Length: 149
Image 1 (tube, helix red, strand yellow):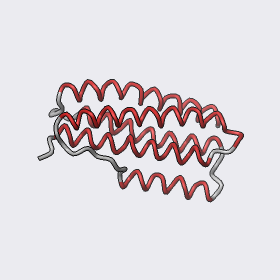
Image 2 (cartoon, rainbow, N blue to C red):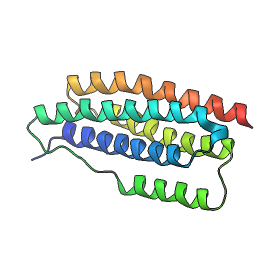
Image 3 (cartoon, rainbow, N blue to C red):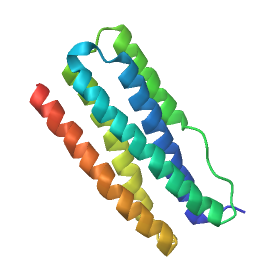
Image 4 (cartoon, one colour):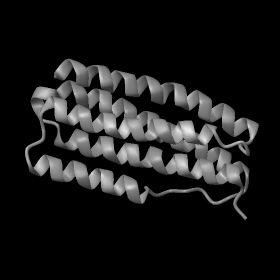
């Protein structure tokens, strides 16, 4: 029987996995004129890999099943990136706008996770710490997008 904390943690693992896949897709599609974005996106993908590992350790400590996949909405998000690249939406602003959309989604997931009153103290502490880096990443992407307009 999965606890509420495990359910919340698995949802965050899933969206972090989505974020890794989304940034890896963006990295693969980035052309030379936006090469600086590759390093930034690689950093965020690594951040989410670490987040997932840390959250998985908490789930494992509960003795529950750890989520390893991506979400349906995450798959849809990546498919949208694919369609956009086919139609030439590869401008710096469009890449960053799409990245910001993804960052908005993970920010929302962390905010909603913290609204759950049944979270264990250790899970809450980890989520708050990760949320700080997620919010900073969002703000950096937003600033880059604004500068690209």
